[in-house]
Length: 452
Image: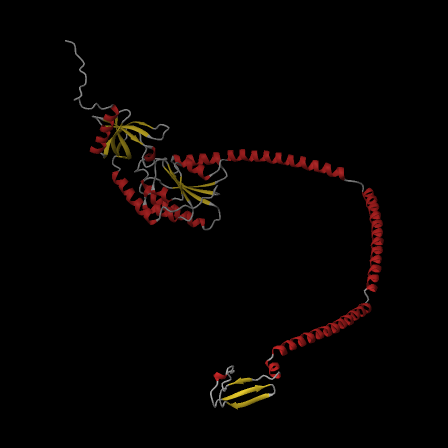
């Protein structure tokens, strides 16, 4: 009987998308496993242009895909090569777009290097807290003498000399052979640094010390993590550049130096200019200088032609100037005559005005005016006096007309009691009352005998 597709009923659970499944799987992996250390063999190490590193970690039974992102690559000290046995610290996750199960690596170290790496981290923290990594002095560019501390049999010295010969053969290179690996390496480099610093106090050259060697494992580079060597680099009076191993190798000597280069060849490139580039720049500057000089000569030639066209014979110039001088002299004489005539006319005019305004005549006129004003003042005073006399006489007449004395003169009298009150009726008096009677020429004191 053929199979029949059964339609999804409303009671069927929700159907998940592929994205939902991958997302839930990633969350479960990250939650349940989280960050772990995994040991295995490197296989298929790939470094694309993005800067990330992709590889597979395997053992005899299984494989695990891994990804080391660019931001973490610089913290990996040892080079990653197929077949190396390493320990990887990372977080188990899943790449959702492809459903790839993978380990997101954060640190990679060769197996057996765990104790060395832990010691490295402890010493790095201690020296950093003490300020041993604070050097940042400028390096002479280019140095007059380059003091190279390295092994004479290593590839580092060949790389440095080859780059210097190509870029800047003028630098005086002094090779100080020292072991760069093993127990004797650090003491030898410390002694060489002390010797170079003592010698530098007697020589005025601009010196730079380059401490360098090629790449290797953590054990191979361990001498450059020596505490005493690190401190010697920090206390060096001469500036120090460190170029130890490959770009991913970082030692304590790199942190203590004034500058670090990722490789010996890069150190030589950083310390010196490129003579070919400078020669090209010099040629370009020479061409610009020649072009500028040609333009300047052309401009000055045009200016010289212009000045030559303006240049005239001294005799012609003197004749012209003599003619101009004669004209100026004639104009000066005419101007002086005209000015003198105007001054004479102005003098005559001022003399006439002064004669008309003589002080004697002015005083005579002022005296006449004063006499006239005095006569007018006297006449005015007399007129005012006469008017006041007439007005006063009229006022006197009016006062005399209403004066009580005038009434008394006609035979009337004023009777007053002892308090000065005027008695107008007989009934206002009492028998035996003393009264005062005012007449026109005096007063009488009378006594009332009775009322009639």
